[in-house]
Image (cartoon, rainbow over all chains, first blue to last red; front, side):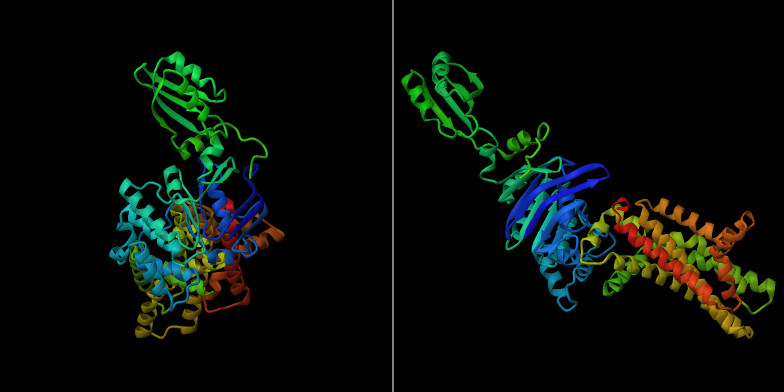
Length: 315
Length: 236
């Protein structure tokens, strides 16, 4: 569906994008993560043929984004960061206008508009002026224009940006309905959103892809798994038992001999902790609770985007 | 070019859903009506030549108002990105927007047709001179609109777009006054660039190929520059 190789984009002398290789399969849902200015929007704009690359080869649906931009744009639905709406237009007129610009034949336009109104739950406001709608509804209208041509690739740049919590839930529900049978790229600052939608996460930093993994792999791959223990016993006994895992680091130890909470970082790549349990059982320490919390994407994101990028880390 | 029509009709509808279109039309026609009365009353001639001269001067100021929002507003609101990510050619976007402004201008021009009817009712006006006068004023207005569309494509700020259009249009309009500062080829060039030098023939019933080429090539030059501007990242 998408293939990008050796893509570089300069604004003046400033290199804003440097992607060695990126591929996306049909039906994949990919989350783009990165700080502001990381290059996410630039990459999305290149995928929509809105911006040219400085060099490199980018293909969407098999078409070159530079040489066959009209064909690319025919297969892409794009929701930009600022919802692209005309406040003076009526919702259904705007969708009809979008449909005609997206090469939908006049005869099929009413059916496609009705379908988009249905999918985005906009039937109740179809005859209203866009400028009079709430922000949540306006975002729905913007999403409706992006899907009006049944695009093979749907690109959503911060689709829940600036919405209130209820509107965010609404828009998330809507996006979940759209995912079927198409490749979706979502960029957002809300990490839980990525966890909710995406199968694969791309973390971009200073224009480079620094992480490209399936969501399930990402937390472990990014650093050590955490282990939480609640123990009853003396501190020296606990500390001596912990020494059987020299790679593990105690990140927190609170409480008293009756109930002591210990938080451990097991170390990169390590998942088992049998020897620690055996060591604890050999002492007078009682194990009250053992929990291995899944590291959150947020931790991974913060860990990966902190500090400078190393050369050659792009995927 | 089907999309040129789709864009033009959307733009034209947008003109008439905002009160600005009606305000511009009512104010322009009010001024034209007063001027028409004054000219006829003073000259006692069944000609629209002086009326065309005043209308052309008015359009120097009106054209940037018609056009200042054409691209600047789209860029400000982010809808330019929407247009340019649909399978629509940049030239279709430019022609569609230009066409809507020209049609709006044409409607305003047609609303002055009763002046001819009044002259016809009371006298026997020189019909060919009036028709060529209308052709001249239309070409001149269409040229000014192309300039306004171009400056609107350069910025997100409507005021900057309008002011830039005024500078360009006024330079072309008054360049005839700058001729005395030049000699030889530069003087001939300044003379050729003067809008007034090309429009005055139309108002007295003369249509020359040179004048037609001046306006038509000027329109296409500025529309081409507009297309280049919207393709250029710096103007986005």
